[in-house]
Image (cartoon, rainbow, N blue to C red; front, side, top):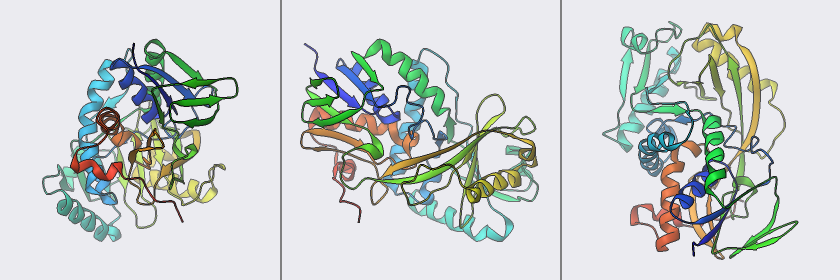
Length: 357
């Protein structure tokens, strides 16, 4: 008889866990408290796959997970029954002329942490050959040719449609009142499993987890033709513009140390949309389709974790790196489930975090 698992939380990490376990022969139940999980942190992301650029403020382990995940995304998307926008055309980082020191520092940090990183310093015509339509005020930038982006919403929809044919049960719109070793309790039933896996993000019971507020916009800009993610570095608030299909772009994202789900503020609106307008004047006539606020789950060191606590397997703390690292983190969580430990280089992921102060 197949082993039975409950995966609680249907964001990107929970959905991938359910997908991978089902394909490995497990009988899986997937739970999420939302009837249609379109309000979770994963649905509110931009799908930026900046495996090298993440070294701006992340540790080398994130870079390693991200590099492996980039290779895995292609096979995951190919295995889905419907097309999902995914590209590896690289990403571009820009700075204002008076912030050039920040670009130098970022390049130096990346070279120090990953001497073989795929990264090019572009100037003048070489920069505009990559993205001809960016504003001519930008004369230097960093190009990361192996990076890319994925339509996170299309991916989640495709995963969930396929999971309906793979898993034993999809319990959406079901609030899990309690979970423990081998048991998931809801308002209507108590179910037993060989393994319970908690992927609920900020809602989880994992010690040390906190919510970090992030805001972004989805806009339609037919006057803009940017073909790859573009970051605008700034000492106070870096901004990225990420292309999707049909003239649609994601503009984000703030990072505010509070667990607050209230609507986007005027300050954040001005910072994000004015930065997009600086990158390309065509954003001035863009149609704002959506403003989004969510809270990213993070531990004190902003590193992801997968660990056992009281018999429950926790996979959490993906912070800003959810789509960036989730394929490899899913693989490692399954290895931990099978072998009870991780390889030495991944041991930090297995260490339970301390509680936030």
